[in-house]
Image (cartoon, rainbow, N blue to C red; front, top):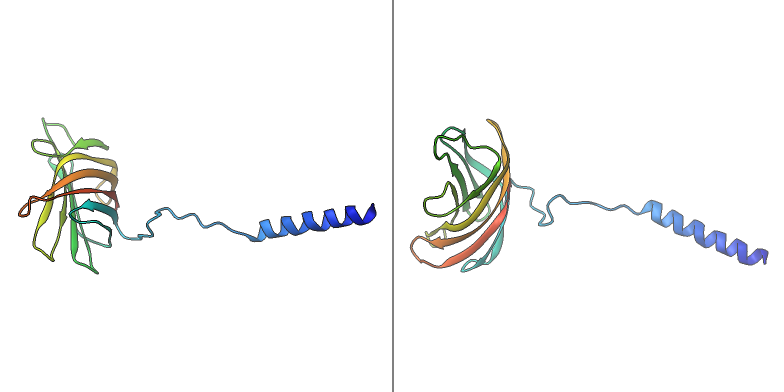
Length: 158
C-alpha cells in the first residue's frame, strides 16, 4: 500500500514539474508578420503579405487619413485611406469602401503593373492620431487594367 502511494506521489510530482517547465508563446499575429500591416488575398492573387515599411502616413481628420506601406522583399504596396464626408471629421469606426464611399483600400503590384482598388467591403479604424493609426480591412478589389478580382483582408498598425 505504501508503494502505491509513493508511486502515485512520484507520478503527480513529475507531472507538476513538467507542467511548470512548459511555456506557451502567444503570438499577437498568427501569420508571424512583424511588419506594419499583414494581409491575405485570394482570387487572381492568392498569397499572404507582410508590409514592413511605411512609405507615407497622413493624419488630417478634417479631410482624410491615409496609410501607405510596402513589402520590401517583393515590392507589393498597400494603400488605405478614409475621406471625410458631409463636414464630419474622421473618427475611429467602420467605413464602407467602394465608389462614392469614404473608405478606400488598394493592393499595388509591381510584377504586372496592375493595382487592385476596393469595390466593396469595409475598413475599420480602431485608433488614429497624429503619430499612429491601427485597424483592419476586408474588401473586394478589382484590377485597374486586368479587371480581375481579389478578396483582400488584413490589419494595419504603424
